[in-house]
Length: 527
Image (cartoon, rainbow, N blue to C red):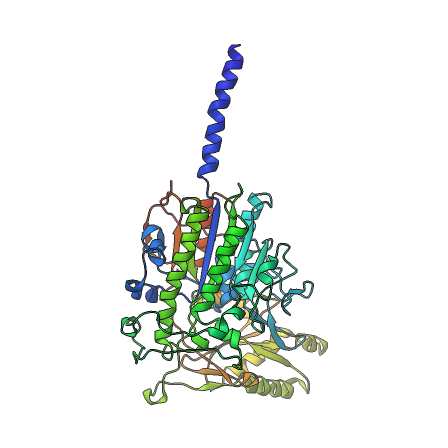
C-alpha cells in the first residue's frame, strides 16, 4: 500500500514538472534576414520608428551593431547561407548567387537543379548546392520531422537557403510573372498562395502602386547624400521593362512578404501544434531600381520607416497567434550595400574602366602566342577568370604553369591591383588577404585566377548592355538583434563574426548547432 501511494505521489510530482518544461520551451523561431540593412542608417532613422517594430528589438533584446563577413564576395545567397549554416562559403558551398558554367559559358544560379520542376515558375531550383545543415534543418531534426519550416522572401536565394534542405516550402516572387512561386523540391507548397489570383501577389497591387513618402520630406534628414527635399512619386507601368524586378526594390514587396508570412502563421498553425516550428522571412532595403543612395536617398529612408511598420505588424501577429513569450526572433543583415555611386570626374579621384570581355580576349591571344592556337580561356565572372582546363589537359600542359603565365600577363593591365591563382590561395595562403579569399572559394565552382581591381574603377560588362560595377572597399556596419523568452536586454559592444549567429540561436533553443559550425555562440546572459 505504501509503495502504491509512493508511486502515485511520484507521478504527481514528475508529470507537472515535465509539462512545465515543455510549456516554457520556445514554440516558434522567426529568422528575419534583411538584404542590405545597415546599422548606421538603422539608428539614424530611429526617431521616425514606432515602438513595436525595430525599437522592440533594439530595446528589448540582445543587440550587436557590427556583424563582420570575413570573405571576399557578398550577395544574398552567400550571406544567407553563412547566417543560417554558421559557416563560411568554403565549407557550405555557396560562393555566389550566380556561378559560371564552364560548359555553357554563361552564368547560372548556384541553386539550379534540373531534377526539380518549377511550380508556377520556369525556374528549376533546389537546396542541394548547400553542403551543410542549417538552423531550419536542425529544427526539423529535433522534432523528428514533425516541426514545420517555411521560408518567404522576394528572391529565391534568400527563401531557399534560409529554409535549408528539408523545409516544408520556400516561396519567392517570380521576376517574370510577379507571382509567388516555388519548385517541386518542396512537398508542402500552399496551393492558395501559388494561385495566380492570390490576394497578396504583386500582380494584384502593382497596377495601382504609387510610391510617395509616408512622412513629410523634411523629416528625412538621416543621409548626407540627399540633395533635395522635393517629394517623389514612383509608378511601375505595365510596359516598363523588368517591372517585377523593380517592384522588388520598393518597400511594397516587404509588405507583401509580411502579408504572406502572417497568412502562413495562421493557416499552418505555426507554434501551436506541440512542436518547435520555424518561419524564415526575407526583406530588402536595396536602393530603388538598384540605383545609388545619391539618386534615391529619400526613398531609402522611406523604405526603412515602412519596414519598421511591417515588422510591427509581424510582431503583433506573432504575439496574437503564439505569444511573443513563446517565440525566439532574430534579425540580421546580408552585410553589404550596393548603393554607392561613382564620384563625378571633376573631383579628380583616380578612376578608370575595366572591360572583362577585352581582358579575356587579350589573355587568350597571349596564351596562343605561348602554346599555340586554341581556346584557352572560357570566361569571366565575379572578378574571376576561368581557363579551359580540359583543353590544357589535352595539350599535356601543367595547369599551374598556365595559371602562372596568365597571372603574369594580367598583372600588367591597367586597373589591376593584384592577381591570385587558385593554387596560391588554396595551398600557399600566407597572409590575411589570401586567407580571406580562401574562405570564399570552392575548388569546383571558383575560377582559376582572381583579379583584384584598383578602388574607384568600374567594371563594364559589354555582354550585359554595358552594365557597370563600381569598385569601392568599405566595411558596412551590419546589425544582429535577438529576442527570446526570459532573455534580458543587453548590448554586445565588440564585433561578431556572421558564423556566430546560428550557434547562438541554437543555444537559445537548446538544439544542436548546424553541422558545419565551428564558432562558439555569443557569451550572453541567459537563464
